[in-house]
Image (cartoon, rainbow, N blue to C red; front, side, top):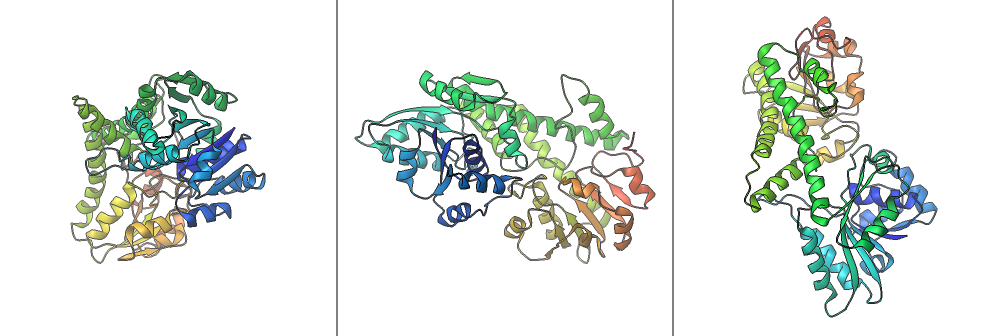
Length: 443
């Protein structure tokens, strides 16, 4: 098939490269000429494991190219995927300006004798498909063009998105056109995954419902961690006992400093706003958002209880600034939020992240912060070290030697990567999230 992808972010670029790897002819469109030139030269705008190699492969096989030429991109695609950003606006609802602008351009450049299936892969609120259809018509003007609209939400996880695209739990496609559903089903039929064919509204809601449920699960175990800290229970033991129940499962039961990133915060808030627009108060989601904010505050309060509210003259080492491991994405990163609070209280920060330092510099600047080249440098003469992103390498450092380089052996583990008992044996004053001081993770 001939496929056009509008947008070269995490969703668009990965989807385009994967579709090309499946044997399709893909054009990725973006208005940013520098980004397009870099992609065509094998320089990726995002960090994603295996993406650079995959793009080089499919480009070399002449099945993938990036362009800024809207007309040629639209004319190329039998399937046109809209993969642009839908950031939250000031009211917390999804900003659909980029979606509608893309829709009008599709209408403008679609020839009258062509048939297009226009698919929203961006996460959009229920009912957006009707507006997409209208904006395509606005762009077409007096032309009588033939097209159908469809929804195909993505479920890719940053850091493992190429694997996820090829091994997805399910494919969701929604449309009021059987022809569009048939074309999309053909695109995904080779995958060993169930294909959920449904109406447009249901397809749009599935993504929000899934992400909001996962965010609820995270907030729930974080709330449990607070009960653990107040009762002497250990949250990892509680999560283990819960997760072995097949009705619950163990995934997303890792207590920490809260969820972040470009999806969960935005999608939870957008679903809550959608419920309000339809005169329903989704109170559970309000609680999820509140719990997520409080979890970060609880963690920072531990620091203030130890050192007081004035952190000047203190040197803190920080491991991790990406919102999760496996990505360079710092959007809505709780790690970044915690760093800002610590620095705002006067602390000097030494920061290391395996992938996100450049984006961290854009977020944080240079005031009272030094960007390090390795995990080990973070410990040197630090009064405390903070683990804020769950990179596996942070769990496997030689803490026995590293803590000896610190001014004082204090670790605030916001991701529960370390074993409290092992830290105690090393003489470390250890602060986890919902952990018992003498918990032993080896059993």
